Image (cartoon, rainbow, N blue to C red):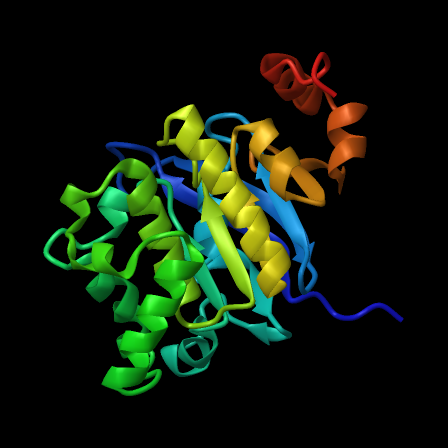
Length: 264
């Protein structure tokens, strides 16, 4: 008997008012009934074109938004729309890494303060324990402890994203939800970050949900892939099977656009 998923989504639906219209006006459907599951230590890539619903799905999986219908469960506990008293104790076990670290990090905080912030918010450890943990995770992402004194504006794009990853790692999560984590970086920095994430996943046994429009990124980090099109999962399975022999037209378009056929 297989173990229950660490993260599970069932029937997720989400729509928003059309731009410039009131709540009673037309709505834009972002997700139209999505089912997903990620096992402990597994890595699922979520791919699709612009407007497919990828970022909306990431926010729902992180319980940052409430679905119109459906449920997200973490370790069997429903977190979508649940009160803070239910979600807060689980927050340390799943953490986000967003696309733009400059927007995600408080410009007034040093890197070390940013990494310590979730520890303080979740009441993890005392001041000395938090200082030690900050140094530990900065080292884990390849940054010197001294760099922790700098503010985000004084860091390179790659350094900022490493700080964002260190911040996500600080509470000791079992799952990271990464929304386009390398798309803002130049190719050398992106490759270095992919190597880092792969090493962290193996070393810490992390589960990943990786939202990306870059199929090479998904292929590098993930075991399985789900293809979103117009708010629906139209194809899902092992990465090499889906990207190597796509069966749905949406997947074929993504593979052709990425020119993966010539690089397998």
